[in-house]
Image 1 (cartoon, rainbow, N blue to C red):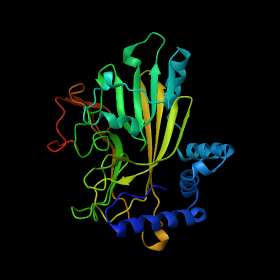
Image 2 (cartoon, rainbow, N blue to C red):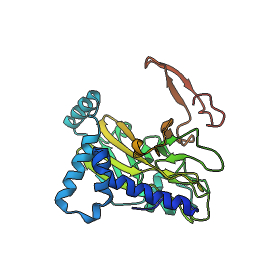
Image 3 (cartoon, rainbow, N blue to C red):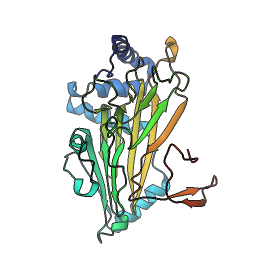
Image 4 (cartoon, one colour):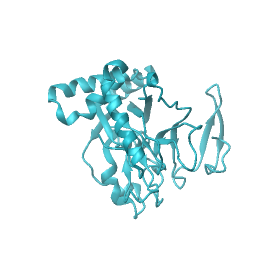
Length: 306
């Protein structure tokens, strides 16, 4: 198990204790902790048990929507197809990442999914890349790359991506933040010389979807807090250019021992956008109807949308 990066012995000790507590409470906590315990020791178990891990990971997630299932079946009949690969190959000719941080992509990369059509219809063809935290860090369509180019000195690949974020707003402050990212940790402490990405707990791809479980990390360091969050994300190709994203956030703290920390703010998903390629946004009404197009997209710091 990879320890939570920190600069304080107190926090390191806390992380070790929490991990021991998680493992020892497997039976009491049920399926989700069984998942974490089994998959964290993946290298120590036999191939036959890999099938069990995949079954547990699939069992956690709800079924895809009927609209996605029907759309995929229709698209497949017409020759549309999904492919995924765990082999990294640079696609920087499409994504054009910032030269300072581009070399870290191979370290970040977990898998790639793409959809193609028999007539190579660019409006129905896409490619997305998923990082070790189970978050999307690249999405290429007919518009080009949708994700920002990663120009930050302290937060490359862990901030301006598509990810889930959870916070305890009562504990979160500048002196000791409580701010958990699916993608990984900011380089705001000398303990990190390069990006630290949230560890992958398990991954399973089959037919037209990939599911990833990961151990979310306290993004803003140094901090005295550890992370008890398990993120599970599934990406499903619905055909016809549509991708369905299903997310689960599980707090692995044990409420029975008095140490549980509630997660009272969820940002699902946080999504950075490359505005040079996608510079407007369609807002929907509460009833699902189209509301208005806003152009250009407002910066997060000044927007009233969030």
